[in-house]
Length: 71
Image 1: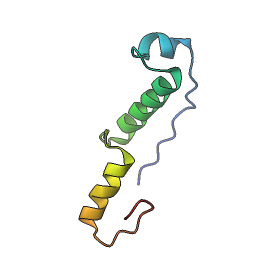
Image 2: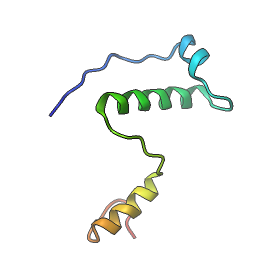
Image 3: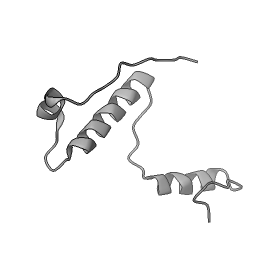
């Protein structure tokens, strides 16, 4: 197991001046950038699936899955 301790990431003017996308609110920019940094550090790929799609996929793979959103 690898444990990565990353520094506290506090939003600032530089973040918003250089990373804020058109139509994006500041909290969305902050969340997106932190998510991207965590994915890069961990080596995991980002997914744009919403949580409901993830549960549906998991139910297909594990038919006896009893997740929070299972039907």
